[in-house]
Each structure stands twice: as structure tokens, then as C-alpha cells.
Amino acid sequence: MTKPESDQLLTRAADVLKTLPEPGWTRISDSVIGAVRSAPMSGWPIRVRRSPSAKLGSVFVSDRVVRKKLAARIRRDDRCSPSAVELELSGVDLRSIRIELAAAYGSDLTELGASVRRDTVELVSELLGEFDSSSSLLRVDVEITDIIEVHASTVEE
Image (cartoon, rainbow, N blue to C red):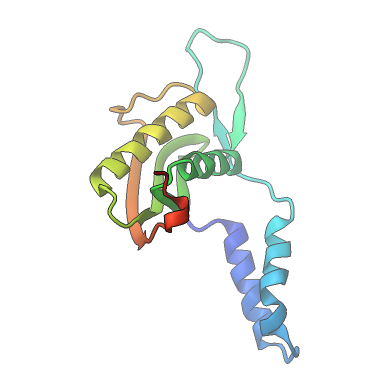
């Protein structure tokens, strides 16, 4: 899936507003963009996987729900913070997830990536039905894009 339509709309709106001779745009731009982002938006439907014997119909979950839940799960780990969660769909079926992280300085990045990948497969299985971590049906890419310092007040002793 490419850049969400809402992000493209926000970028375009910001560009248009910046070109207008409106005094004080720079001062208010963050609050305006924040208000637009908090406005209700629809998402892309993702089909919940079900057993072949189930004949009750289909259930769908919004991509916004999946992204929000994944970001919240990743934030539980004090070693990292998600900066982006992208989903790739084929029609209404989830095919891959790409997660960008800012990791704490000194973290074992290989282990952190594996942990985030496991948590992702576990959560997606809870939300959408079973995905085997070795399954070719779901690809999970974790990219460490930044290193952050952990402040002493957030480190447990």
C-alpha cells in the first residue's frame, strides 16, 4: 500500500495553506494539521481469516485498527518506539507489514527486530486469525531508522 490518501491530503493542504499570504501560518500550522488528523477517517478493510468450514460470512477489521494496535504493542517495549507502521494489502487480504523503529542506544538490534516481528505476528493473529511466523502469507519487515538515548529516569534499576 502506498502513502495513505489522508497523508497525501494533509501534505497538499499544508502546501496550499503555506502559499497563501495568511499571517501567522507557521505559528498555527501544527495545531491545524493536528485537528485535521484527529478528524474521523475511514480505513481500508482487512479480511479476518477464518476456517474453511465456517459459513457465517466474512468479518473485516480496518487497517487503522491494526496499525493503532501494533503501534501500542510495540510501545510497550522500552527499547523502541515505532515511527511508521505500513500495511500492504492484496484486495482485502493482508500481505505484509513494514515497521520503522527508533531504538534505544545500546539495544541488541537483531534481538529487538526479532522480538518486534514475533509480537507483530502474535497480535495480527489475535486480530485477524492465525498467521504462522514462518508463513509466506505474511511478511513482517522491521527497519531500525533511528537510535535514541534512554534517559536515566526511564531505566528501571
